Image (tube, rainbow, N blue to C red; front, top):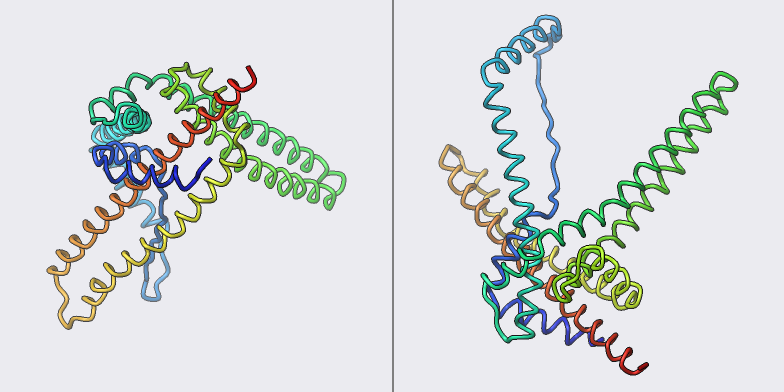
Length: 320
């Protein structure tokens, strides 16, 4: 496969057909995002904290709050859960729409948001089934690992009554060994299943296959083109490093002037405005970068799948 040709064509499609950016943005809504941790600090001016007195007040306040706002809290939680499902459904359809859109561009010379969206919506349940099939082995792997780990720890606890060093050694052995194998195995399985899903989605839309047949075809394409797939992963990894560097430079360029505002003699509420503007501008820039990456990546895998399918057809015709 000509990697330069595939990557170049994927970028041409990404830049030329900006209608796909909408689908790329919507598709990125279902991708995972990292979380943060917070800390709570306090000073008591040398006085000891009275846990009995303050703990009772805290319990009372929490109880009063829950009695007053329990319905609102539950309603907000339900709404957030419903929104999460809606965003996930939109993300799945948009992912399929990106594949259908690239296919329409290559086959018909053009596409539109409506055409691409309908192509993804038509195969929503197939894409959903592929996601379930890709998740099942991970669930089984985690269950097996937890069972083996639990049996090992239980055996170690039983040995503690006979010999404390032997029991501790057994527990540590199972925790380290099983935990290590589980983490490594989980990481490798995630990569393989993710790639099967990527190819399977394209098989479902480009070849109009059901979710089981598409999953099987995805596995077949991965096996037959493992080397090319690994090279594409390495290329995307290198691109990711470059994008990370660019994002860091952009973030520093936006943050430096804002941090300089702390040097003013009389800071006030007016600082809230620049920080909100900087945060909004940063969010828009990073959303645009993520959208372009999503469209370009999806287009590359779609074009690569088309190349693999064409090569396979040529081999079959030659054999016949």
